[in-house]
Image (cartoon, helix red, strand yellow):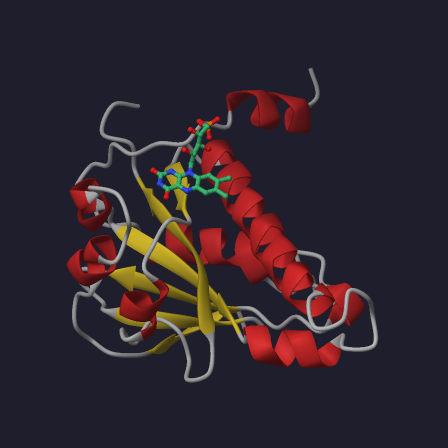
Length: 189
Ligand SMILES: Cc1cc2nc3c(=O)[nH]c(=O)nc-3n(C[C@H](O)[C@H](O)[C@H](O)COP(=O)(O)O)c2cc1C
C-alpha cells in the first residue's frame, strides 16, 4: 500500500486526548498542513482563484490564541486567555470533551466577501460561499491526514452556534467561523 493510501485508510476521528500540550513543532506542523505556504506562491490547500481567504488560529490552554501566519509559518499571539471551554460550549452537541483537547484549530472566512468575489458566477450570490466551505473542507482533511501521519488525534467539529463562536476572539473581525478541529495526542494510542 502506498504511504498515502495507508494514511487514508487509517484516518479516524479521535475524541480522546491526553492532557499533554502539543509541542510547537507539532502545532505548527498541523497548521502548515491546514494553510501552509509551499514556497512557490501556493499553499497546502487549494483555493478558488487562489484567493486563500481562510483564517486559522490555534486555541490552547497554555498559550491562549495564536494566529497562523502563512507567509512565515510563524504564530502571532492573540488573546492570551484559555478559550477552549468557551469554544466547547459553543458547539451544538454535549461536547465537554472538546474543552479537554490540547488545541482547537478554528478556521474562519468572510462569507459575504466570498459571495461578492464570485458574484458573476451562477447561482448568483451563492457560488463564492460554496467555495469557502469547500476550502475549509480541504484544509480540514489535510489536518486529519497530517495528524494520522504524526500519531496525533484529530476530529472536525462543524456543529456549533455561529453567533457564540463569532463572539469569541477566535475569528478575525468580519470572519465567520467555518470549522473547529480538535487536535492532540490520543489518550489511548
Ligand atoms: C462536515 C462534518 C461535520 C462534523 N461535525 C462534527 C461535530 O460537530 N462533532 C463531532 O464530534 N464530529 C463531527 N464530525 C466528525 C464525524 O462525526 C466523523 O467524521 C464520522 O463519525 C465518521 O468517523 P471517521 O471520521 O472516524 O471516519 C464531522 C464531520 C464532518 C465531515
